[in-house]
Length: 365
Image (cartoon, rainbow, N blue to C red; front, side, top):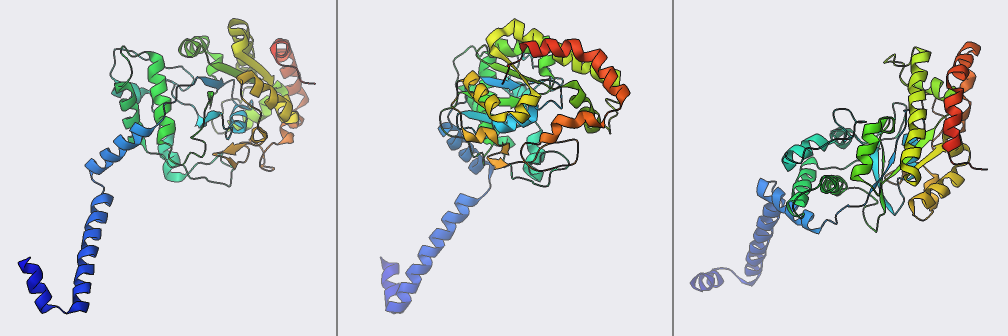
C-alpha cells in the first residue's frame, strides 16, 4: 500500500496506466518463457499428459506379406486412408534379427529391452528427411514423429496393464506407442478394426507365420502372387545394385518358396489367410478391394482405390520408368523385356507351383 501511494504521488494518471501495462506484460513474458522452455521437466510433463489421454491400440494386425516386388507395398498404400484401420506407413520392421523374422520376446526381459528390440529406426530418417516412396519418387511428405514420446507411451502402457504381462500386451503397447508418437497422422481417430502392415518375406517363414498367429489369433494374412514372368524383370531391376537376382534360377527358387509358402499358409490357417493375384489387384482393383474389405469386416470406401501416404496420393515404387502416380497398368507386361530363353526357364521352373498357388487364390471374374 505504501508503494502504491508513493507511485500515485509521483506518476500522473497516464503514467500509471503505462506502469500497470508494463507489469502485465512482464507477467505475460514470464509465463510464456516458463511454458515454452525446453527443460526435461517440461518434456516429461508433456509426455505424461499426452499419454494419459491417448486411446490404446489393441486391434489385431492384418499382415500383407510375400516375396518382394509382388505388390505388397502397393496394397498397403491402398489401405492407407481407410477410416477403420490404423495403417502402418512403411514396411513393418519389428522383426529380429531380420525384419521378416517374427520377434520371439523373452517375458523375463524388462520393458526397456522389449522396446529396444521392437523399435523401428526408419522413423528417425523419415522424421529428419521426410517420407519418400522409392528412389524415383519426386514427392516427399512430412513425417512428424517423436521417438522419445514413443518410448514414454510404451513404458506407460506396460506399467498399467494387468500382471503378468503377456506377449500380446507387449505388441499392443508397441502399436499404441507407434501410432501415438506419429504426431501428424491424419487417420488417428475413430473406431478401428485392424492395423494394416506390410512385411515382405515373413509369410515365407513357417515359424514366423505360426508365431504371428500365436500372438494374433484374430489376425489376418494377405498374400499376393505375381506371375513369375512379370515378377522376375521387376525383381532383377530393383535389386540390380545388389546383384541379388542376377542368377535367374536362384531368383526363381525364391519365388517358388514364396508361392509354396502361400499355399501352406492357406491350408494351415484357413479363412484367416487370403491369397490374391497381383494381376487382379492391378487390372480389377475395385473388385479386389471390395473383397478384401469384406474379408476384414470393414466398410468399402472409395479411398481403397487410390494409393496414398497419410491420405496424400503417392507415386508407385516401380523398378521401371515412373509412368504416373497411382495404379500402373504397365506392371502387367514386364515379361516383354525378357528373352525367349528366360521365358522358357521361368515356364519350366515355376508353372506347377504357380498353378497350385492360383488354385488357392480368390477368383475374380
